[in-house]
Image 1 (cartoon, rainbow over the protein chains, first blue to last red):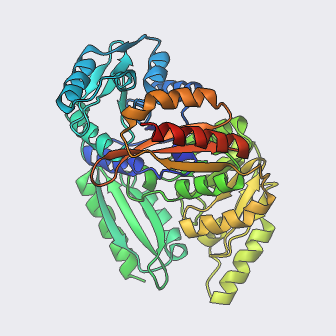
Image 2: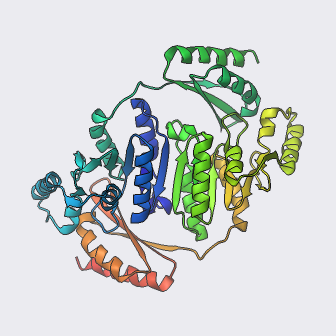
Image 3: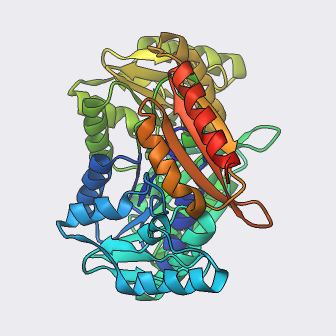
Length: 234
Length: 234
């Protein structure tokens, strides 16, 4: 995932899209491998798009596709793919209809939102009209969370969906330092299950949640059984 | 900034450290330029540490310095700097005293938290004892937000602090599409000020906040004056 926007890096806006996309992809059985956040600077966006689209099967971006001068994601993605930036005819039509229905002028700023790299396909936006787009393995979405989420719903049916990842959570009722030694042993004994331990303060003391994740139901069940019996034995 | 942890990428834990560090650095007058989130995989962490420490003046990491097998940040940072991983004598002493005071056994898992690259200096942790560390331009902190924040407070006095960035926020009371054209012109006329526009829904309609940021007080004042008079003129 690539998050684009000076407002995230300055702290002015707190990102909500990373956590949402992470959950969404987990439900689809797609592993999120890396996230980058960059500012509204073309060279930085181009570099990140190239690096991520070369490294991973799928790239999702959020931010930088609005009507203002600092919305340069479409420019940067076109540059990253070495293609021209055009006004996408279907996108222009969508904006024209929306503007007409609301009595808005379809000014140059609003028309910016129809710009896509040549060859891109559109991602529908049922919230506010102006679409996102896909080119190659890169899917470009808005930064406003409600719009990003609507675009993701529009995009999801066309994504290659793997087997769903299953998870089990166990409350350890003790600190991470007390369970770490044997959890390391159990992890080695269950290579098909990923074991994570997450310390937190429950208001009274530090305790730990153990999360087991696997795509294989039987493997997950066996690992869960081993963790629970280890916890019960002291 | 480099955030390390499978639990963030899976969506299980929602990151709170990025927004906090972003605000904190802004207050110090340090620009946050890029954030990456990677999983608990050594090669991925080593690659990100090398890339970020080569590209930027300062790197802050959060996550992966606890007692369990998947806490491999110290290993990865040592590998990135090409130095040995050691048990830092002062860190061992801190953990020993804390364990003694609480009647804990200083087991192998707890001792993992004293591991640092050779040559690292410690970052104090007033919350739970186990320290972070600094090596070169990389500052390694815990992922638990309260501990990360305490480590940041311990670290801050030694950071090179620039001039504070100043900002002004103006409520536009209209949609982004209506202001984008003239805001682009004003941005060109005020090169020392960064102008951003942030659309949001106020519960009744879509409106926009304009944020002006600059290190120069007079430049910021002039830009603010121009934006406000443009808003008042229609």
